Image 1: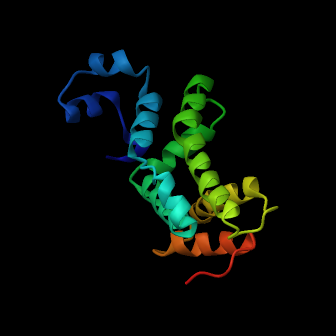
Image 2 (image 1 turned 30 degrees about the vertical axis):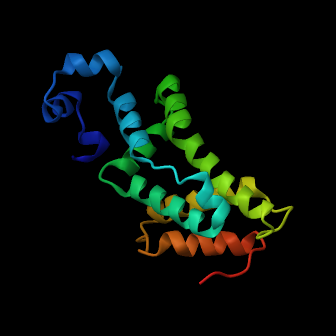
Length: 168
């Protein structure tokens, strides 16, 4: 794949062994198709994983996020969703299928840590959720390479910022 800009409905149809018309029956345009493709990649860690070891669940969620945004053309899809010309319906669908579920999973992991007394009871989880993924986008925009251990390092930083004990 050549990224979002290089993606076309015709090329996707050919690769999938179907027709453009078949794709257009399900997706109005390539933005909707790409949004659904990205949403299908995410894997939800089980709620029991967060309850058993919230820190490990946080690392796993961040690793899953990194896999999702690191693939070819994925960052350009995020950029497309930030453009003023993006159809508001497509943008809302992207938020509902990709952004909100990820943020909800991160918040659930941090809430589990709070309930277990592993982080401060008054920790600002709303800001923490944004910190979890925002620093990845910041590095990408600055052109800084994302280190291989980014999920663990980010989890450790956020964890300590929320009053948690340092983790190896």
